Structures are given as C-alpha cells and as structure tokens.
Length: 88
Image (cartoon, rainbow, N blue to C red; front, side, top):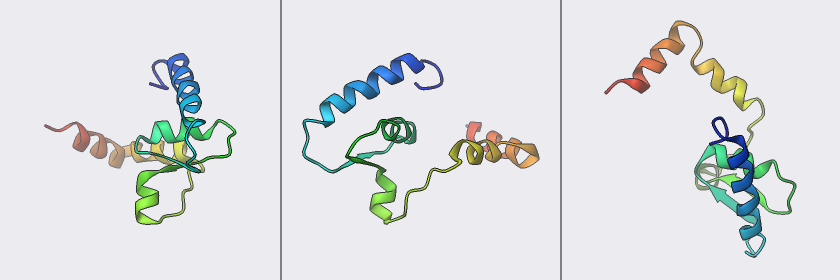
C-alpha cells in the first residue's frame, strides 16, 4: 500500500496506533514488513517487531533495508531472482 497509496498507508497507520494505544501490550508484532516499517516510524512507547524476529529471537535491524532489497534484484543475479519469483 505504501508505494501505491502512501496517503492510505498513513491513514491506516494512524488508525492502527489509535487501536493499539488501547492495548496494554508493550510489543506490537506484525508479519508484513511494510507494516512493521510504517508502524515503527511513529514515535511510541511500544516496540514494533516482525513476528519472525520474535519467534526466532533475532535482533531486529532494518538499517538500509531498502538498499538491501534493491541489491537482490540488480544485475544478472537479480534478473534470475526476479524470474524465479515470477515463475509459475
């Protein structure tokens, strides 16, 4: 949603935080990486975590995540990766 409708993404994030503020949990867990990144941009007392990081007890570090994702699809290896994803 963020790339296609950033206005809608912002609206959804604001709505989710209104709902989450009513919950006593100290951690917000999400599976969608876009949701994790968008929710984490809002200053809040709750920690936003990807569920796999919680389940696997992996330190969460999304520093440079956009650059890392871009690298996956660059050059000949990137074309192979894209073709693998798009294969039936």
